[in-house]
Length: 342
Image (cartoon, rainbow, N blue to C red; front, side):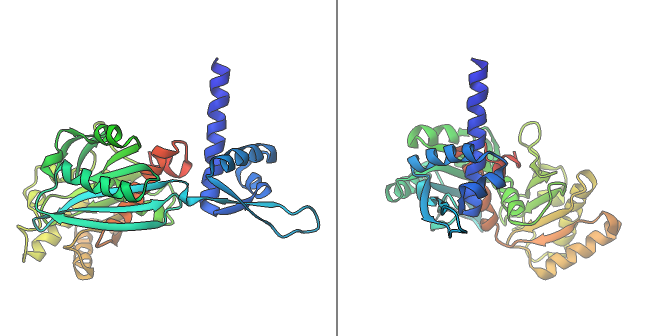
């Protein structure tokens, strides 16, 4: 029995390896796939046959002949299934629900948002119901939340209606699809890291400063998301320092105070994690503010310890990308492109 389990798991791993290469290259031949994956041509042929039967891969036109028998070309079918990414946030006292539907190649099919005073679970379900009616092929759902999440359970949240809610369980039971619930900056850190040419030896901090609430951050160390013992890592807004606990709204028209506060906070990351890269995101940042923060850092720390500072004013691009990667992991749980962060 153990032998059969091992064989089955190996087949699943090989299938996901082939699937990942196909998704990346979009189109390839069986021989090219074998060369890229390190698997035998026969193994690739068997996997391709299964994927063609399910419709996940499409057998396409023949590749140009080099004198021998023309090789079949296999295209990955991005529309085999769809992924819904959805998140809630709050800026300037207004809450909003944002969503994006994409195919399995990461191509956005639809994007939208809805603004309201307070977001409730019913609002979220209404949006998801509407999207599911128009995209019945959704197989995985990624939900982002500004709060502390552990295995789909939200123990703390800047959106009060979701505090102490097992959102993953609720959504999986209602929609019968794979669901991932993730902290907003954790997802953004994964999304940003995946979209850049960073090595897995580089450590990264994605720090988000909302206008109405406190700082949150996502941390990647040696290419992996660092969650901590109870998924509390990165919640620097709870440090017992007054300048950190002062929201951006309270610091309005106090730019110098805010810049120094950010620099001091970044020193916490530098002293504890010593990251290569720090991304600052939020409406309060612009090129001049970033420059002033860097100057403040130079006065607090030797230049050899200072990380590269990136500025991403809107984090939705990295946010959606991170939720897509995590949702893809839920759908195909052995994909290397996702598991390297987990």
